[in-house]
Length: 140
Image (cartoon, rainbow, N blue to C red; front, side, top):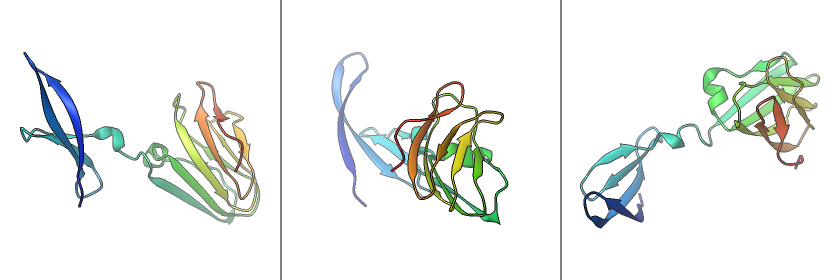
């Protein structure tokens, strides 16, 4: 397992240079440790690029994201029998990468919103603009 070494200036009463090591632990959590062996868990990495997938099982009921699914960044849809909806958290600036592999168009939106449509077989980057989810990129 490799280490990434970053130089960081730590200011106490007088400036000095301290090496910082970033490393993963079991469970995928990222930690930071300095030369003084002070260890800090970097919570910012939690669920950053985790994937949530939903198999519509040849149906098309709305997929309302659970709390844990809502924290992930990548959403993948499969196996629908008609156009589908993803009901995502009403969280301003939340970003998702949506891969629509369900065979029909998919809409990502907040509850009661209109959202945006992602064509089947396409991937889009979307974000919550404070009102609903909007497209950041065109479908690719």
